[in-house]
Length: 559
Image 1: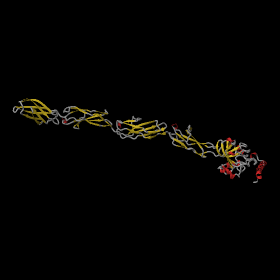
Image 2: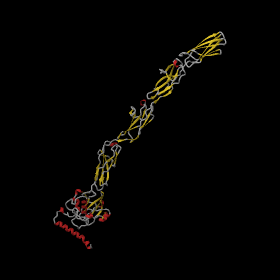
Image 3: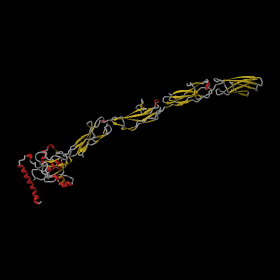
Image 4: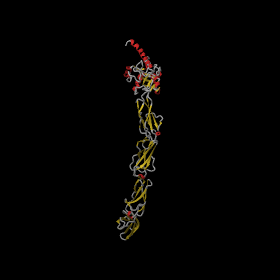
């Protein structure tokens, strides 16, 4: 193109615009129809908008493409008119193109002029001061950087409420992306929300976890479109906001018992309306569950008179109270509920002992743990502190008594059985016993049996007596022998309880002794060669297994 051509091009364009404008007036178009062919009344004016160079992020299709800032295909489709706007580099045609591309029909949504300055005034119900991605930024005529017919652009990104990034085309200019800030003086007169992309909830948040005291509920944010949103959480109990519960999780306290829990997630993103979604409600919050970390255990010997001790185990969280029930063969033992110790009484012999521990805490379900049962309770032991003894003279006809001694427990029952050479004597069960003839020659003892319910019987024998013997009585008849200076002595022995006394007898007079065995209780001895005169005679009975020894002395006269 020659220099002349370049210089004349703007003029030619202005003339053409004037011609078109004139033709419109000639055909008598109504004011509402003015400008329906294009957005401007002529082509003689300059660009729609002039920004500081520093505001542009890119300029021209190629520059913007190289910087990753697209034109949504307008470079290839700008020869077509959208919403009856002039094609080519034209802010209104580009904005209309982006609206059609977003899904709107290629029909201008209002009647009347198409110049940019009319867009916001023609659509007041959808024009406000809130920027959103996909909205049309609109400048009135001569507002900020806009020219005499205003300007429109497409909002690509909302950085904040005071900063947006737009893509735009410009009459007499080129396609570009620019940063618009409120403080720059270039802020749009408004934003027209023809077909903004809305922030939508595609699935509600869900709550995971068991609704019971002590557990932690967690919430998903739900799914949103677009997905890169910031999500805030608010938990509710029975529809009322829980103060401070703004995390994605909620620990359930006792205050939440029987309440239903919901959570609301609120999504936000610059340039999009804030949206909220609420989860389905949980079941009513149940009391929490206590955990038994270590089982209760029983220590001590399972024997009557011993004491068992219960360790109640460990729990989480710490219970408010622990209820103890002792069991014998699985059945509660009366009178010991709540005690940590158990005295083993006689009635528990043979039973196995265990205990249950029930932990309780407000807001939690009670939990019971059972200690391992003991071995069967063994009987108690009776302890003899003083052995029994026998008192009395061990002779035929005498009465013996038994001192049963001392023992623990002192209330044990005592039974006595007399023994003859270790064998029980029929009927001899009193604490005293009269010696009988059948006892002669035997040793007597007493067996003491100690019993008490729940205790092992204890049997203690006394020491045995000396052999039982009868005390004899001696009758001695002396006959003097006139010859040989001698005596004839006849000895007779009787012993109570003994039918016939036997055994050796020795008769001694004046140093002369003779020994003879008793026959049928009688013995006869002849002593000769004795010095005459009065002499002492000694009769000595040596005894037998049933008769005691005996010595008899008397004076006799030897002729």
